Image (cartoon, rainbow, N blue to C red; front, side):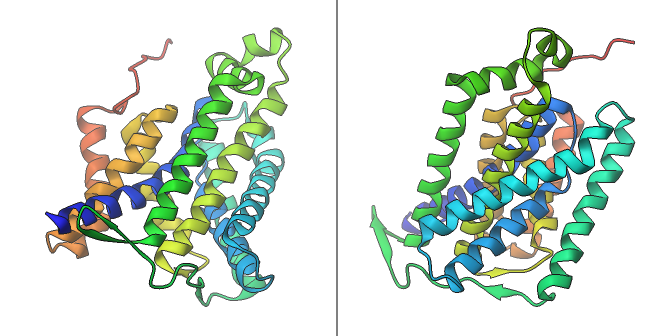
Length: 292
């Protein structure tokens, strides 16, 4: 029982990382119907910014997290302004191809700047564990879970309780009508990219804290699994992205716990296949047939 409780808490912590990344996918799709495949690399940049803040400048966890979030937000806004804005009314395939190109550009620019070798995050909480109902949990997992929950709560507060959040929901519902009502659509979309990218950067820092090793290609597989989480929850749904991330994290942990660790990555994509076959709108999505 203690072992399963421990695995459950580990799965929730891992799922919280996926949920933070998935929020970036779902927010951008919800507002401009774009799958931003460069988001996984924004997550990677956040991990490296946090790493250098911790090791080169010897800052603490919270300042490093905030710096990574700011850097990722600025990168996200730059990507939207330079690469995506002029393609907003273009064919979906054009925007998708551009997103893949931006992803590759970020990865290989990072390799050019620092090399392809991985880096190891410093241990911020060495040998510290939390005893909970007889289960021994690494303090890192507790910090990850608390940080992720706090960030998701702040996001929900911004979206539901602020004027900016109301503008985001209006643009998501009908972009042209929002423009006619006096909402600055470009500004609202930039804020959406900034928020989603900031959460991705935060996920990069806590990922490094959890897994220790980071590298320039870390955003590829992790980003794809977070995208699966967004689709599972219902792409465009913020609560859906949170739940989808937790489900993917729990499934991966369960697969590893029963001795099938080699199949943990495949499990996420099996879920993607099943959700597309039986409920393509996702758990929290609604089927909306297109008018022709």
